[in-house]
Structure formats: structure tokens, C-alpha cells
Length: 203
Ligand code: HEM
Image (cartoon, rainbow, N blue to C red; front, side):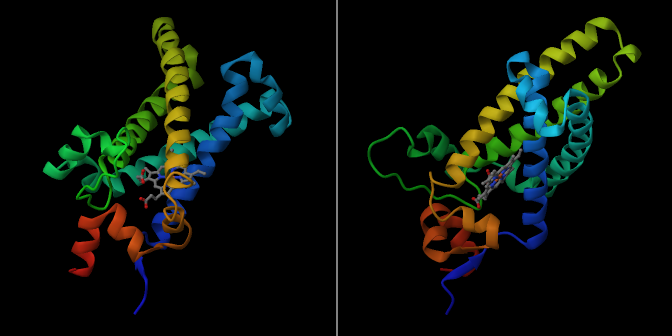
């Protein structure tokens, strides 16, 4: 009997890594546009003008792929049951000394909040990005507001993604396997997502 259980299909993993690569291209090309402090990062793209071209292309690809990823998981990510409320009330046990056990389904509420944030950030960054792209077509006040919102969302998204990468790798060993190979160890599933494991295996 196998010690593994399927968590993500190949298409889901390809989409996740596509979104991730687009995000990191946006981050690197956007840093120099955000502040002159980071102008050095333009050299990665061969100059400031080229960085803007990369930013626009990656922006369109990120918007489409990230929106698709959100709608793919919308049902799982936007419903919170009584067990999720308990997890939230106890902050997932992250602030407690004792080991906490929660009846978590396929995603814990922290992951759901991250996915919802990603959906909102994708929309805000996309809409404000289009306004900044063609500023002459929009009122001056709207362009200024968009510039501010775009920068703010960019900083928030970078912070959320740092936390996401930490929790999905060294913070919770065994999690990365899900996105790399599609399968996770049953022992990992029982520990982190017991309700989901029970639903799948009937145990
Ligand atoms: C090197 C960068 C990244 C790594 C190593 C990584 C890793 C992972 C892993 C292992 C999972 C599966 C978690 C599980 O099975 O419970 C996951 C899920 C997910 N990832 Fe990433 N990811 C990265 C970047 C990103 C980026 C840039 C975004 C979006 C902007 C993103 C969005 C998501 C979402 C929405 C999920 C599903 C919900 C969740 O597990 O939080 N990821 N990621």
C-alpha cells in the first residue's frame, strides 16, 4: 500500500508555478519602478525600458493565470466552517507554546485568507496597472490614486508571499512535495489536514 496520497493534479501545479514565475518577474522588474533605491535591478532585464516591457508582459500573464487559479479553487477557498472558525479563534495555534490539533480540511483558514488576498490583489494590481499603463486616458486624480494603490498592493503582496513561501517550505516540512510532485505523505496529510485525509481515505 502506498504511503502517498494525491493533493494536486499536474495542471494545478503547472498553473501555480506559472503564477509564481510571473510574480517573481513582476517583483524584480517592479522594484526599480517602485523606488530609485532599487534601480540596480533594471540590469537584470538589460535596462529600465526593457524592465517596463517585461513588467507589462508578466503583468498580463500574471493577471490571467492568477485569476484563473482563484476561480479554480474559489469554492474551497471562500467557505469557512465551524472548525475553521475554531482555527481562527486560536490563531492556528501559531502563537501558543503547546502543540495544537485542528480538524482542518483541504486548506486551513490561513491558506484560505492568503488565496482570497491573492484574488483581491490580482484584481487591484490589474485594474490600477491598466490605468497607469495609459495615464492620458484617465483623470489625473484617478491616475494618482492608482499609482498609490499599485505600490501599496505590491508591498503587501510581497510580504504575504514571503510568509507563504516560508510556511510552504521550512515552516511545514513535507508541504513542498505537494506542489513539486503532486503527492504528499499520508502521515503529513493526517497531521496537517485530518478532515481532508478522512474524506479521501474514509479513515
Ligand atoms: C517559490 C515560491 C513559492 C513556493 C515554494 C510555493 C509553494 C506552495 C506550496 C507547497 C503550496 C501547497 C500547499 C499545500 O499543499 O497545503 C502552495 C499553494 C498555493 N500557492 Fe504557492 N508557492 C510559491 C509562490 C506562490 C506565489 C507567488 C503565489 C501567488 C501570488 C502562490 C499562491 C499559492 C496559492 C493561492 C496556494 C493555495 C493556497 C495555499 O496553500 O496557501 N504561491 N504554494
